[in-house]
Length: 544
Image (cartoon, rainbow, N blue to C red; front, top):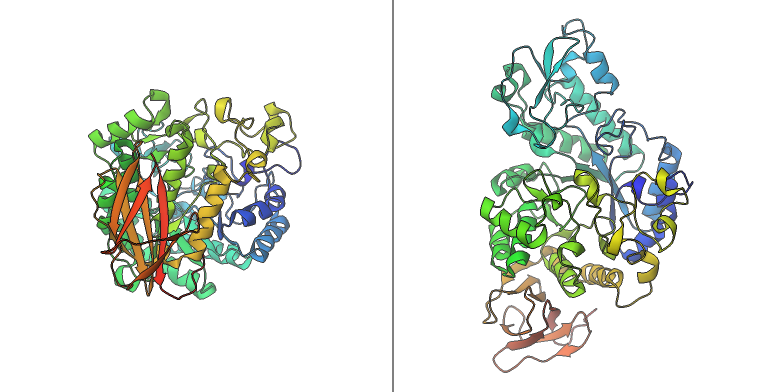
């Protein structure tokens, strides 16, 4: 979540650390076990805080170090770990390092010159390498002051750090150590694929960065400082490359990575109402070390990228969930939240989240997903899904007491605005999306099979719109059945397996289910219906 759009405690229109602290019991009640904070560091805020100009500071609009430490203590008291974005691919062009690097281009005379990547010759056309094709047309920008070009894979106001420079690496490690000392439990590492620098890309053999060597250094330092700290990587690459960033058999790089491929294939499956693209993605996951894990998700704070789909597949998802040009961004993704993409159908929304929670891995929610917030399509680019949290149907959705014109970003208007979607209305409603998500979290906590079990996709004759899979660990299993289609179906699945004569419990209704002769379970599913079943040996205490 983003501190500046979560809850405003002092009424200035900007969310703050005190506001988050006041809402920590809401997060604890939801059942989360880890809180990922988007950047809260001092920043010109030209990229929503990802343009950092002080790695050791706290944006004064959001609070101070004392309030940050209090927040971490409150979270820890409630069993919630706290991680924060580690933005080390680039800094803001307002960072003191970059300002100093521009004063003299001779590294012998300027200690900070090689903190960034420079070249004197014209780099030519590099438009095919930019991250934001709607915003930039080159990864190099001419610095008029020194007459040389600096590298920036993202915006031109975010110059890339030279991760091959020992002094830069030392500063990054010092930053990591600082925040660990203040209580952080780890980091979400931003933009990992862009750590790599080749001589061809930079135009010089001086600026070659092996990202795996760097990640091993980072992991080694992190583990020395705090053996329980973790790194969650934003690694939108091929499976082969993701395996390398886990550290392969050595498991000495990332602890966790977001599974972008499974996310994108999930949307293709939802668009087609056909589970086979998702099954293909799950079967394509490489085996990873037992200490590593995938993070599953449906939305995050960025565009819903579809870059790993073919052009034809991407157009299918666009047609189903974002047919208007204003809903699309960067020619590769959508600037929408899930409920509007599902046409506001509560059955389909609940099925989608149930599907995500049932997959092997660790589920990740972007704040506001738990109540079904929508997007503001009038906002530019990715800011469409970064609107303030909707706490109540009142003024500013209960986010702030400030005048609406002073808000850091306007509250979502229309049918997904706070008048219709908010925490207060849903909090004690057993039929609300918030209650549904809270129930899924409870099931996940009680069923280690889902996070750690061996996946089996089950055969059935109910058609491709149905996904039936089970996850086995030791003498226990969880079986999940999801109907991606709008029509009711009857599904027969074989529950024979490692558990002889199992006791079956419906995890949603808590009823005991009967297995037919021959070891077959018959499941009736409504349109977009779901079932979760736990299999345990007879006579064992089954909780839930």
